[in-house]
Length: 366
Ligand SMILES: *Cc1c(COP(=O)(O)O)cnc(C)c1O
Image (cartoon, rainbow, N blue to C red; front, side, top):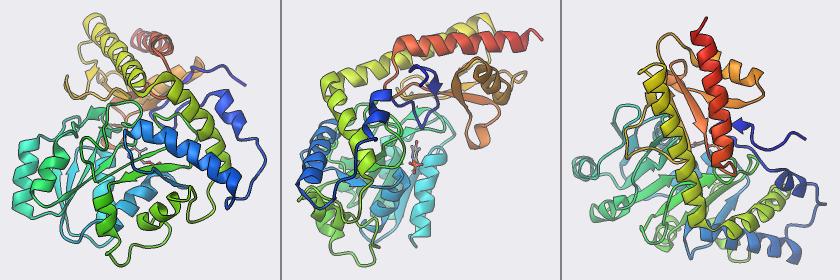
């Protein structure tokens, strides 16, 4: 097994050996006391991360499953999709594919939406549902979601939050910020293998969901909530992944959520100052795509001089035994992305950044 600290994709993220090894435990029935205890420990640990008193819904699926479930459980009426990159666009597409009328509000890649615009758009569209990406993984932008639920509620709408690369890395207060539904996936800042999705629905959101027809079956949030009461899931859960989660929630609780946020902020700051030094000493075209004040603590999207392509850098870094991400979608060739989330630390991030710099200098010297 390789040592930890070489894999810096913005998802999936690197998983510690102890977490991987937990998955070797034998199977148990998922309708029984042993499973219920396991599920209960995972739920308790995740509630602390979501900062909620509500049960955490645990789905055996990638995060997009709960994205779809949230749309199917949302009140009828137009959807206002706040789009600023590939994943917030995915929310809009999921809503459209579920038969919703969707109004996309788009800002340039790297940017975020401002609350006053959202208020105006709610009034103009009569939307009853707002979708937003907390941390837009394709651009490294962090959307402020505190306050968005309140202003959505004032307009008679609910707020659905994709916090897939936010939760457990960026501050998020599900209950205090009155978020109607928020979800994440196991393979991002929680540093678990892919395959589980976690979501929290407010009691009011669940109550209105129960009156909706055609919520579907596999991602029916009302069913998940019903089974969560007895610490079970509606269908067979990915038990091996819950073993991994059980180990990881123990580590999360030992670290503490606020310390985890601080560690992510420190990794972001280290990346930011590294980019600034590259811009000052190598080429001023190196920069953070997202403006200061709107940068995700879990992923950085870095702009490149036109003389470099992401592919050449990613390959050069791989040849030295490390993994980073290229850009995403229209940014694929002219940006790179560093995932500094999960169980990484500043020392590890500093190490991979030194390697990236070495590769960049070698490529520019040719
Ligand atoms: C990774 C990601 C998703 C998609 O998650 P899957 O687990 O692949 O379904 C959605 N939103 C954001 C912001 C992401 O980073």
